[in-house]
Image (cartoon, rainbow, N blue to C red; front, side, top):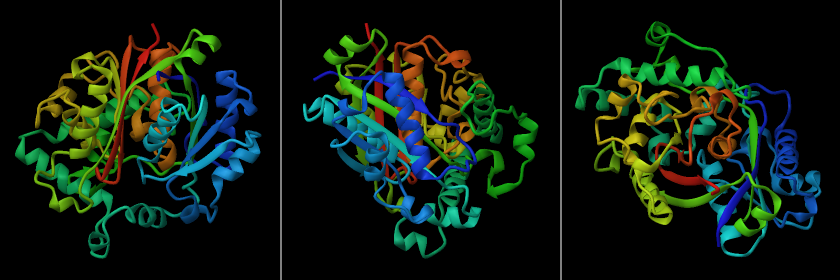
Amino acid sequence: MGVAVIGASMTKFGQRDAWIRELLSQAGEECLTDAGVAPDDVEHLYVSNMASGEFEGQTGIMNLLAHDLGVLPAYSERVDQTSSSGGAGIYEAWQSVASGASEMTLLVGGEKMTHKTTGQATDIIASITHPDEYKHGVTLPSFAGMTARHYLERFDAPRESLARVAVKNHRNGVDNPKAQFQKEITMEKALESPIIADPLRLYDFCPITDGSAGLMFTTEERAKEITDEYALVSGIGGATDTHVVHERDDPTVMGGVVESSEQAYEMAGLGPDDLDVAELHDMFTILEFLQLEGIGVADQGTAWEMAMDGATAKDGELPINTSGGLKSKGHPLGASGVAQGVEIYEQLVGEAGPRQVEADTALACNVGGFGNCVITTIMEAAE
C-alpha cells in the first residue's frame, strides 16, 4: 500500500525551558494542524525518544502525548533506537500504514537534554556503546576522532575538508529559523577551535539540544482526498552493524548505511544518481563523508573531494543537509531522524523557504550510535 506524508512540524531547536511533555505536545499539535487532521482520526501514535527516563525521569511519554493531543483511543508506542530513534519511528509509522493496520499515523520525536551538564549528557549518550568499550572510557567523540584520523591518513584527505562540512552546514542553518545555530562560521574559526578528539575540533561536533518534530502518515489514496501537496515514502530500509566498533572489517565503512540504503533503493526502484537532496546524520563532520560513501553517492575515500569541490553545497550537484544538519540545526536525539524527514518532506512539497532547492527525490539517513543501527528513507514528490 502506498504511504504518503501529508504534514510536518518542528519546534525551535536549542536550549528550551520546556520539558519533554511540552515539546512533544507542541510538535504534535502543529503537525495535526499542518496536515489538517482531527485528533480522533489518528489511529496510531508513535513517539521517538531515546532517554526521557535518563534525562528527565519521565517515562510513559507516549501515553502522556496521546492524552495531551486528544487522540485516544489510538494505539501508542515509544520507539527507542538510540540516536536513530527518529528514523526508526519513520520505519514504524510507514509500516503501520503500509500493512493496513492504520490509515492515519502520527509520529512525534523529541528529547530534552540541555538541563544536564555536558559531562552528564555525554555519559548518557555514551551508554549507547558496548559495555566492554564503555568501561574503558570510550565515548562516541573518541570513536569519531579515531575514525577521522584513520580516514584522513588512509585517503590522503586534507584536514580542511572536514572544516568545509562544518562551514557549509552552518551556512545552511542561517536559513533555518528552527535551527539551534543560525550563524555562519569561517574556515579559520573552524580550524582554530579547541581540539576535542584529535583531529576533530569543537566545530566538528553537533551541540546538545532540546526539541521535537512531527510527521503525519496516511495512505496515498487518503492523501489525494486531503491535499494536493504530499510526498510518498517510496523506499525505506533498516540495518544493524556490529555493536563493538573495532570488530568491523573496515572502520571507514558504515555497513548499516550501505545495507539500509540498498534496501531503500531497491524498494523505490532508484539509485544514488536519482537523488536531488539528502539529509545525513552529521553528529560529527566525518560522518557526512562516511554516509556519502555508504549511500553510494561517492566511492570509498572520495567523499572529501565533494566537500572541497562544493558539490554538497546548497547550489551544488547534490545539496546535503540543507536544514543545517545536526551540526547547526541541533541534535535532540529522538527528534533528529524525524526532523530529517521534515526537511526532505518540505523540500519535496516546496515549503523549505530560503533553503529550497529543486527536488523530486530525497533521502534521509539516520544513524544510531557509531553506525550500530541505521534507517534510510527515500521520499518522492507526488506526481
